[in-house]
Length: 277
Image 1: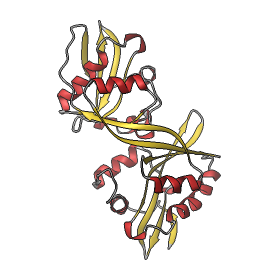
Image 2: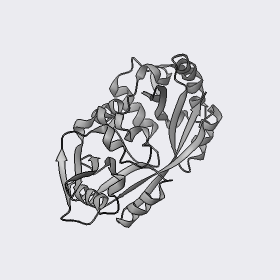
Image 3: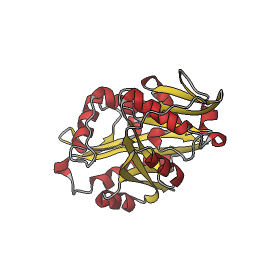
Image 4: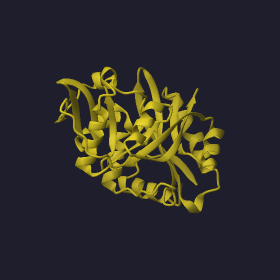
């Protein structure tokens, strides 16, 4: 078995290995090359700092890493760990981390994070052995939202946002995939809407018009409990046929109650884990 970084591996090989590694995952999904390229761009996956295990020249296991400089801190996100089913039980993930962690540390990357599906105890134990610790729990929601209108509220589709302003509308730190940096890297794939309350900019949402997946949303703190959030969710649901979003911080109890009040159903829970040295 050979362990090397992935800088010379083709997109199709990465897509194939990813789909193979997640073929029996509890959350069902399979990527096309086009979708996987979008993931690479959005999550800033750098193949030079990602790593794979090869058997007879075939990629049979991998760790994909997204890199970001956030507030002067060089951070790493595990954007996917996978092992082909027939090669599991050989401690390959540990071997991959033993290979790549010194490389990342040498480049100044000392803050790592990842997400593991709640209940996947085997995977969590592997990450814990490497040194990762639980940091928070996140959850997904999906469903349809009933139409809602208020003469005081106007929803407008726009082409851009003042990112500095809308960040102040959000309650929690987003996970890596839903960060403003990730969204901006693939912004052409999304629809942006702003909400105005009595002509005051009071809320926003960014969503995929094909699926109804919300990437980010928020309401100005001084304008809450006025139906603005409900208007935004109803608008997205009406346009896309449904609303869904993933990996929302479960400690934000007020927002969780709000999502439930709209009739959205909770889904998968994940555990965010971090390693810092």
